[in-house]
Length: 197
Image (cartoon, rainbow, N blue to C red; front, top):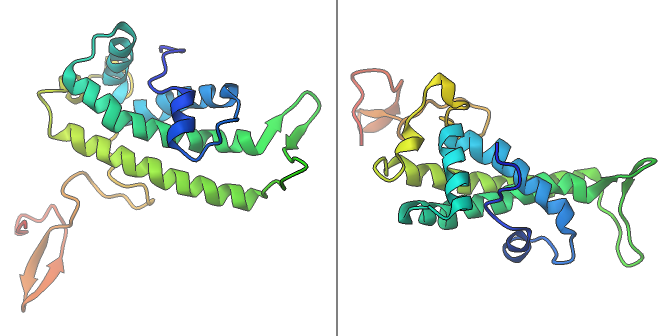
């Protein structure tokens, strides 16, 4: 684990998301780390995750890895970090209690408003996570560590295509179908009689 190696900065989070520029970096930094450890590592697996951290820290990223980091991992981490930070922005742990922030010129939102905002940020980071996985899956030559895994490597890469609570096995985004009486009929993707489109 490479604590302290962040793939995006707090300044970048403030510049490219809805976070106000006056938010303390001390709130964002641990949530960027959480986004990497929990989110990104789950998507790409421990082996490739550790490789990207080491290459970014040592300045040894390949051209393909630089593109991946700037165009796919970066946007994912920006929105995931805000998603992770929202509960801390909403409610702070102080010496004597938990407190909800309020200022003379504004009124604090309630828990349901915060949950609504969190859902929006979740949808954004899930969009970028799907783009990231789609980008990597067709570039096996550029990212060989992403496709390698054994039990000693730690966490395997995610094989989840969607986040709705419905399990959809890996495969095409559209279900297999066959035609009957001129109408498409959707069926089990393991059925050998399916035709692809």
